[in-house]
Amino acid sequence: MLKKILPPFIYESLTSLYKKLNKNEFIYWEGNYSDWTKASQQCKGYDASEVLEKIKQSALKVKNGEAAFERDGALFYDQEYSWELLACVLKVAAEYKGNLSVIDFGGSLGSTYIQNKKMLEGLNSLTWCVIEQKNFVESGKSLFESEVLKFEYSIEDAIRKYQPNVLILASVLQYLPNPYEWLQKFMQQRFPYIIIERSPYIDGGNDRLTIQHIPEKINKGSYPSWFFSKQQFMQFILTDYELITTYPLNDNANIQSEFKGFFLKLK
Image 1 (cartoon, rainbow, N blue to C red):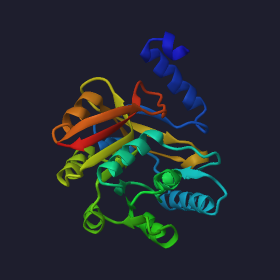
Image 2 (tube, rainbow, N blue to C red):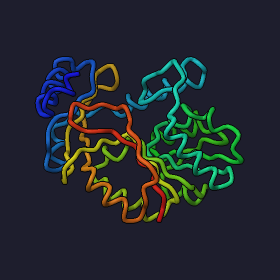
Image 3 (cartoon, rainbow, N blue to C red):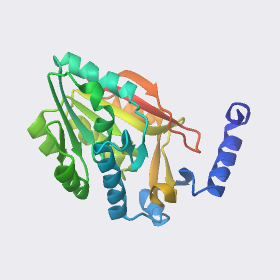
Image 4 (cartoon, helix red, strand yellow):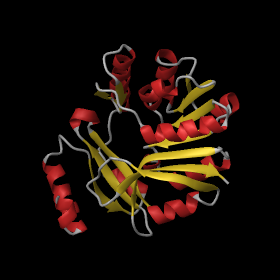
């Protein structure tokens, strides 16, 4: 209600203050930094081994049937599906006669696939390959790899092995120091389709670099995070790809922004 009646800068300030006062409960963003190095210097960081261990233990509980799915180590006990994402990948599968080969860049231990795998049954063929940091790939290969779910260290290895027809970038671009360089690299690989999900966008011509704070109940720490200029981002990506559709997502920030999904096809 307040968001509807207050000017944006007042709503943002009040929301930011509320989340700071309750920082053990909420993820929140703050700041407007000129470069990644300066933002990093203000971050407290987090223990990467502890993060992996928490995600691994949560994923094992899902594997053992103790929870429906996990995301970033948080367990969910009621089954939910990513309906927009499923519509996109099933559209790709239909075009390729029931054959779907996914590269999931930054896909943790396969959480997106595991959450939605029941809705992907019945395809002629399905491969879901996660590209991640070395320690995640090692854990993925030893504990979670299957005939469908695969883990690789690099885009190049995954392309060579699995000939993907769609790339998924879910909540990953905003955490890269040079996101446009990575986007350029992805576009040069000429994936037939790209799905970009759960990245935040703001109005205006410039990106905004913030610090994202994570509460202790998740994985206590802080690290740089981008809010992309929607105009600049789309101008960049639409040089080689055309927009099939876009859809809103429910992630909320204490900054005037919107989290969106983009479904793109190679021109």
